[in-house]
Length: 437
Length: 192
Image 1 (cartoon, rainbow over the protein chains, first blue to last red):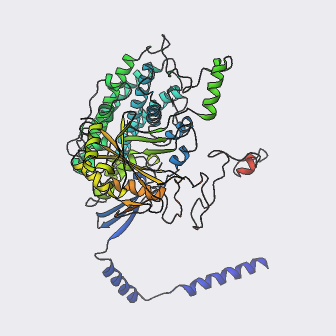
Image 2 (cartoon, one colour):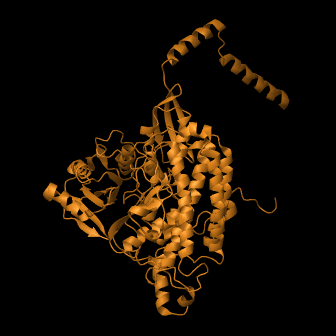
């Protein structure tokens, strides 16, 4: 009985749908289609690219207005990964914010750590007093992060426009960098390595040798990527003269990093406002000549080689040598900035007080405001810190390179073909974690 | 030429509207008394003093003080990397100042972000919409009177319409609540 009732209900439902469906004769449908076509002609199509699109490298959404295949208008829509990092920073001590910097440009966390630590140290006025070994370690970290970020940038750029092999090659090398990160910091991805006034730990035994070994391997791999792409007919056709940014536009839109230098503007913070031990190191700043996607790709390739060169020099010169036999310090000695050694905390009164004050109240920073810009892989990562004294910033503004770089899209994209969007986005190498903060 | 010389030139041009250049940690800060003239000052700094690069615009909420807002501009010369920080105060009643998109186009997104986060209006901005928060969000989250936990909104069908569960600091769960299995229904109990 139940079964028959169920059948009846189904039948009724079925009937209802039939009654609601309007069946029209073919002639009427055809005339409707003609009407529709007439409306369609000359009408522009609006296409939503993202927020989940493989070529948008995260959650960038671009609303494209298309006339056929030509883009007539592009409106980037950001903010899908907004976590309120600046608000969070106002509510915690300076040291507590270091893990949050990992999550800005999550493809180069070590470089973010270095940038943030340097910003706070500038506010404290101790950035010139950092121990030399700490400076060298930080430069090695920043440059490893640059190689890692550019490997991913080039790999994904290639994958987006059909060169999948490159992606596989570069990811093999990135894996090695992650292994190095793991043995140095204890984490592969969220490194949280630097501290205000130093680094969390010295290099582990054998680490410098491993870095040297990696450098010798990565240059082979970069050369291989180069043979796959640089003279590849399809690659060149897809990227040359696509997404051309003039020098004036690049400056006007505040581009930074490889995107600025790809347009031929000779500005690298490592040279222009040298920090850490960069003045002691020899390296070149590659520049593009046209400002197209191809130039930005070439700049990234050369920057990787220059980073390799920088790290080789650092390993040659690092104070204390590979295993730090002479016990060079890696932190400033000021007990009011850096946590004391654990052994002393439990045996000495002064160190106990320092430890307690640092953990509960944080580093006591003087009132004032500074801006520090760091040459991150993606461009200039800047921290503007406004302090009113005490252990937490009153306001911290993060000037993220991806955010500023993306603002040129609405100017750059119109006039390009739809298929060029992936090339342009790939060549920009942005990260939404940093863009949205 | 140092940043201090350039700041003095700027001061010489605009007189009493600008404060004396102050130096802290090697950076030069100059305060502009009348926010209405910001575009004019920026124009001069760019055209005559060579500050072609606008690094950043940020904003401050001096909650409980007058003027409540400070808008901070970071200018840079690319040739010799001289930097200048330009600050101007905006009162809470007004909460408006002229845009500088006409000087640097990169100001577009920076100004949108300040509007989004602080609620300061930029007069003459062609597209002053929210940028990080969503369209229709009623608050300005970086203001000091906006709590870290967030505020409930009446906007239907969007995330974060309730305050975040935190106690003391961000992402701290309240003690004495449910255990892991109750909190997370996907956790399997051993009997299964």
